Length: 115
Length: 118
Image (spheres, rainbow over the protein chains, first blue to last red):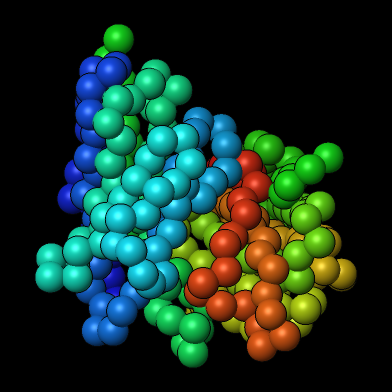
């Protein structure tokens, strides 16, 4: 069965420091991979997605993620975080275009920014 | 209004009450979703509507009843809920192809309704 693991429930980073949020998935074929962000009191917003091609994906707000098939990972990175990046981040996996439309979601990682 | 809106933003109800959550999308999409978001748990897909037809019901208890009168509006009718139903209920929409919603479709989310069942 497909699954998504975000090992870190919380991460605290100083403003201006680099960030990496981990996401590991379990899926037999090539997955469709997503990162969403949820700011306090807001709905989820798509940061970036990977379907195929270049394994380093650029997203909005200066985020990027790298798909590593050998590690079944799709970690999210940002070189320098801003206080406005404080939010909860969700990784999700899609089963594929010929399958259903359901996304399998991770439990989220809450990012806390230290001034 | 732009994007996906949800009303009310907060709702407190007793277990014997009947209430409804409303979602409206202004994006011209043709697929809409209800999710339940509980603390420290992954999002749970509850219902999906493709072209106004319900195509998914993920074993959701009958005390939750969805309604999709048109492609822009989605309701979630609530009755005789339990305290464990307290959660953030998120609505989302996407633009599906003629083949129906796919996991490759980008979903656009509303801000959610924070539901508390006493």
